[in-house]
Length: 179
Image 1: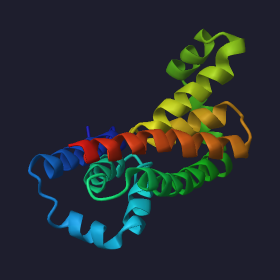
Image 2: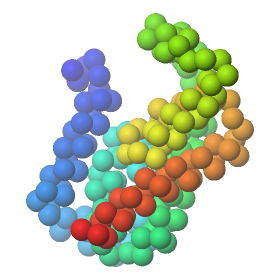
Image 3: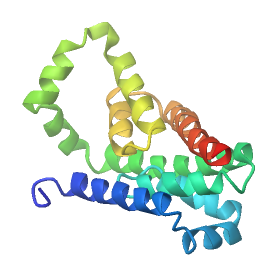
Image 4: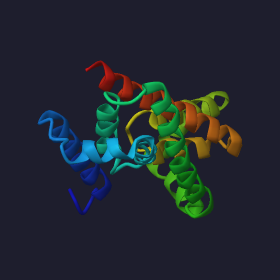
């Protein structure tokens, strides 16, 4: 499985690590360092919230930070970190992976999925899927890919990224605050 699906394998391992950090309350190493960093640590956690391998630990860190920081200010700051990461991903997809994206979109499964969507709804479905992936701790690379397929302007990608990440980040901070 590691050779065939390395990204999925590492994502699952990251989720397991995040689970054990939260389960055992074993944040003696992570928590003090992030608390000393204050909202800079929150910004960094937000930046890591977007990447497939780092999103589970970042979500766990946001849960911890929600207990010690203002969750509204934390949401704003972490969302800016996530936005910067998503813009980096978007730039790579747009400028460096364009030919790969065209090849992937011609794959049987994706082509079949795309053909099933009524033409008038394609842009809406791509944007909706982009929002779902970006707001969740699932890999933003997939969500940004769908936003790219929707061919929306860069400014709208920024707005969607910021607010979708803000929703997901707020949920983790709120849960950390409430628990």
